[in-house]
Length: 131
Image 1 (tube, rainbow, N blue to C red):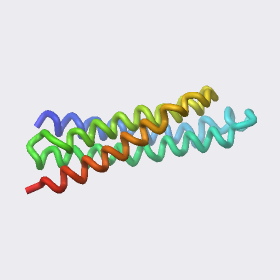
Image 2 (cartoon, rainbow, N blue to C red; image 1 turned 90 degrees about the horizontal axis):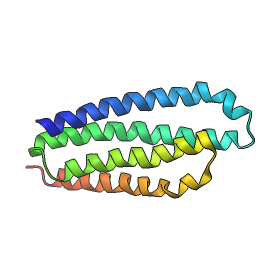
Image 3 (cartoon, rainbow, N blue to C red; image 1 turned 30 degrees about the horizontal axis):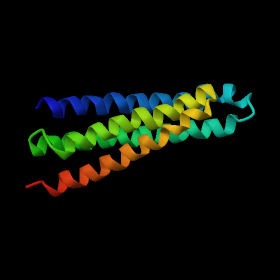
């Protein structure tokens, strides 16, 4: 099924990116962030972004599994899109804040959080509807 395969690929690529960005944050950013006054706080932003990124990469894989079980449509597809959007908006805004120091980017971070929550609720609906 095309939708299931698409989200399995997205899960794998997103997961690999989360691990790479997490490693970069742990090793590559240490020197850069250590030399600026709010470096510790910005490093915490990065760690939060990478954590949620990785968790939701796995969640997208779970949604792909449910998409396959449900025939390729419905709430599992919506859950996967919500989580992908959440990774982009939530984690992306935190990554950008870390690198740029622009705190105003944090205004969109809660939108990503709401997408994460919506994804989990759509997953629950998808599971409820399983035969």
